[in-house]
Amino acid sequence: MSERITNHPVLGPIDMKKEVSFIFNGKIYKGYEGESIAAALLANNIRTLRYHEESGSPRGIYCNIGHCFECRVTVNEKQGQRACLTPLKEGMAIQSSGMLPTPVKEWRETYV
Picture 1: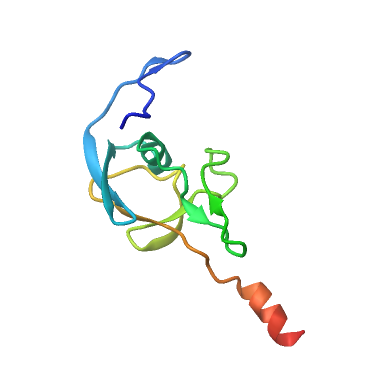
Picture 2: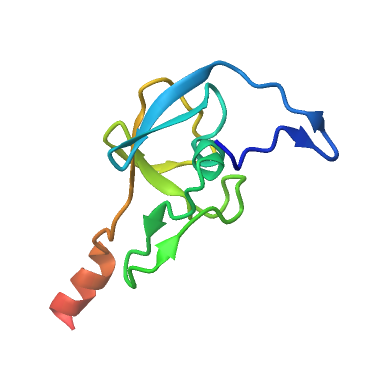
């Protein structure tokens, strides 16, 4: 976890909690219990969390406060979880979200 901030210039030293293991896209990583999934992924140098539904372009952390939905991942088989708001727990299975179907667009194409 070489990318982790341990001494913030404004907040001071960051207290580390219990270290836990989690799986992201089939690979095992370490993080700290209770930190956001986004923070754990960033600390492990992971920047791409999903791919845009239509273009397939990589998406990552954008607002990091739960407003934009750019950091949606699948957590323990539950799609659409925001990595910036979901606390990390031991053994979580997290997957980046691939290109998802866009039902409204597909429906329009069928009837246009």
